[in-house]
Image (cartoon, rainbow, N blue to C red; front, side, top):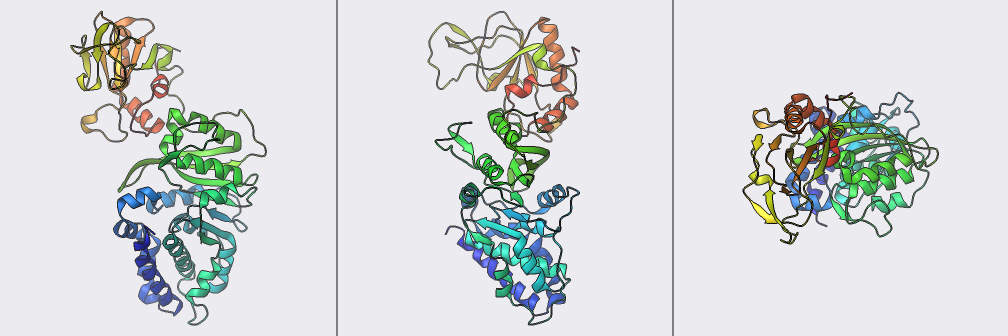
Length: 443
């Protein structure tokens, strides 16, 4: 087992739980606080190599992410009879967030029995499952403020109460479940894997998170909810538009809240989704709240033809007429550029100046010197240009160079950069997003 090193931490948790049930709360309560808030993820990083964590999709939902999920669970509805299942529970952070909503009994033993009936979890790594059970036992003790009579409960009995949290394949369990009467918690693996042969919405490599969400949607009972932490590419990526449509046919997407970078050690942006199972599957429904409303009544596609560059330089043959060749590395940061000095043979589509060239690579968040998220460069001249596919081009439908200069002003505005940071947190821009940029020139 590649995560066996984490067992050293579960041994530490067991000793801590033993002290708690023996009545040593005043001596160890600060250690319990650490164990319930962030320590599990810190120990994961120190005990399990990064490559193993990536391979296993092991990134625990602690800190602010967990707090935000907890707030997402507050639907204003009674929580006394709620049940929760986390099919990729890791060390149990989302189950801890759910436990915060559950009532307690008159004693610690009664509380763990009550929670054990309401909480279910699975993970393929046994050390993580052990940690989840132990942390839930500690959380129950914390709710009782450490008022535990020595001998009233032992650690093994407390862990047996959480027998619904077991080692197992969460995806397989979801696929074998239907009409689950409870809410699903989900922070699935974010890596890619080959799409199943019978997948009808995509092909090739696909985000495992996308697969988990659809399996979870199928497993949910009517009107039961899913609370999920998901990679932002699912919310904003053009490739996942069919996935979003499939999700919307199964679920009422109530919230899709942008979060940003998962944590300081995990360079991936995520969003939080709350959704409820529909009464019946519908082939076509209104779009969910995946991104912010437009800032203007018209968009860039009303005034420009927006396309990705046609040249894949390391793949396309050098055949056809010789044409100026525009690449991202030859593009200045901003301003204007004449006909490129570089050239190549290309038999495909060329772009006639004037047009705006925009780099596809675009990191969200703070940028040095206030650089625009979608900075463009005006390309001038008379010769048609072959454009590398790392660039997006916007060619004016009318107005020529003057219209291009107006677009540069729009792209350089802080309002558009902020809108883009809400609209797409991926590390690249898409044609669809550029087309949907607010355009103040019409309407």
